[in-house]
Length: 323
Image (cartoon, rainbow, N blue to C red; front, side, top):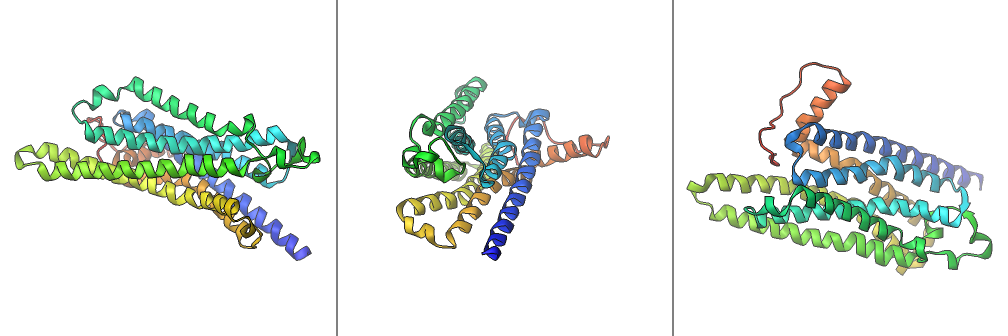
């Protein structure tokens, strides 16, 4: 028994250490993304505002979600509703990430579908409204358990007020599966996939139709193709990082006997870590796939961290998304 207890404690320490590292990397990387858009005028374009919204959610993972995940792992006793609110806070930022990715996909679709009227349709005011709407809807969707759809009725009398705070104790599995997994992860991913398929179809169609005397138009669609590939990678990594946790929730809900398997709980922890790690990946993708981000990151590091006077010149003459 002592050996098993030691293994559990070692596993807990390792999990907390990984969460701390992920949190720090998420804070550093996404702070750079927000900073880059602020200082580089060529990054202050429509799609980049949505990317900033996504970076804010990823930054919040480092600042709020990973510390909250650590608190839940420490098995601290709390009153039911404060514990439930902490769990809802975690879901808010997940929902905001998904809605930001969906907004990016819609923005790219409108850009290639209506290139001539895009600037009139997607104005800065409408972008700010859309971002605010995404965050508001994300918060409302995440706070539903606070209004009654939670697990309190299934707890014993002694746990309905004070309990050891963890996610499964307070969150309703009905809500996690049908609202969060299906409504906030799977459905948006299917919608984004359909949008990007249509975007690639439109781009390829225009590139094929472009004659040699319309080289500029072809070049623009070629540029859109490259940027869309970068954003599809971001969406694909989001799916790769978040679907395992959704699958774990669905398995525990539809096949509760599987939860008793010794390998199930480590798989849940791994899927949680993977979902948080997604917040570290996006800044890396931007720096590798979008040159303006790469050059601006280098400039920020050299000027403000290494305190060098010379900086790398990044193209800022076009307010576009060139790679």
